[in-house]
Length: 492
View 1: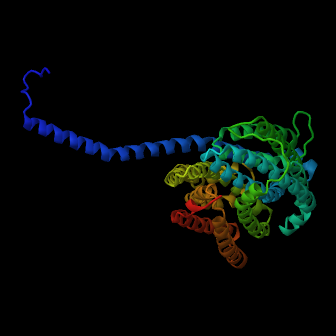
View 2: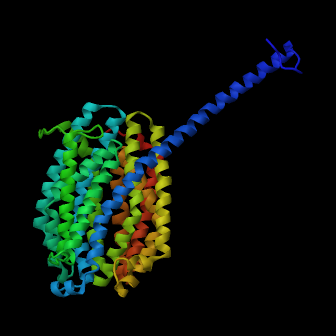
View 3: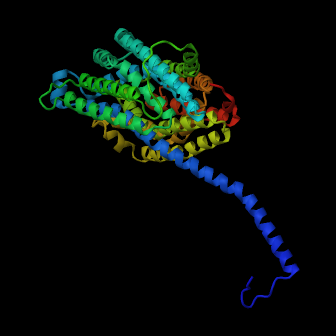
């Protein structure tokens, strides 16, 4: 072997030195290899989370835009429309807001079906169990159809009693009841839309739900714009026009989603078989029922809570509704990352990788929490500008400004609640959210509202003080539950 010029041949002592050096180098590589692998896995989780969550955030944005478009258009009624229909923008906002309270109440059932579907699909994908996937899709569609049909009947029968329970202003009750009945007409395809998109997210496909919501929004905006103030020669229908646009858009979305499942997509395919599968239905119900209970507990408390707001008058309720609408934009990263986190946590647990599930949850919290905090900053700094996008009424703008600042400050706590609850639900741990919701809403929010608003006359700021206290306590409880690690041992 030739040697480099200027270097002597190796002696035994030199060879001993190089052997030690190589041994030390190998040892260092052995130590650094797990660290390198850990860094690679962390980078992989970060990329997967971002890739999965971004379309989910977009989907939630589009889903929210259905409501935002309605609020914007009915909040800006043309003077001729107001004169013809006999109500102004504040009354229109109140009527549509109360109608949407009912819609969100029944959506609880649709979301419960979706939560069960996401958890089961994610586990089956992680375990590479194709046979179970087919069963899950069939029973998810069957359950969604039944729940949607029941919700339609409930909308037609319970509109007036529901508004009476809320103590809705008398001048808006007939308008709200019409809104509820029109949107209820397409609750069945709406339930299918939400159940199928939840299944797709569990399979790791967040882009298709995004595209479906693009279609829903395009239809909704076109029809609502045409009918609220009367465009293109169509009649000006006000709140009724907004309801027609929402109903037709969501109905079309549900039909498109069913067509997609019948053709097969993202490893999921619907084979029409309407026979119940008791075992799979039991699993769906076991996961979804606590979520339905959690949301019903929350919505039932919300009905009482909303009565405090409606008792403050039409201006206060309109301000509250706009604040909720703007805040719902800040929810979008939380909801999107909750969906992505639930899917990745479920898939990791299905593949028997609990450490990866935990990493996914914290990565989702980091990314989504950062986005929500930034949006919260805009709400704190520019509340009047944001409210003025939805109404030109100076009294409503003034009333909505303090609550919107409070909503901005509580965004980090909401991020913890949204995203870690998504992780728990993706793992099938849906009972703990029910228990924590009972505590924070019924034991904290309602009594505090009664004291601050009912006794002390705190008005709309007092309402939001109670809400923010609820959100903060919920975040603390959810973080404690997640850190306990008990969700990793749940069987679905």
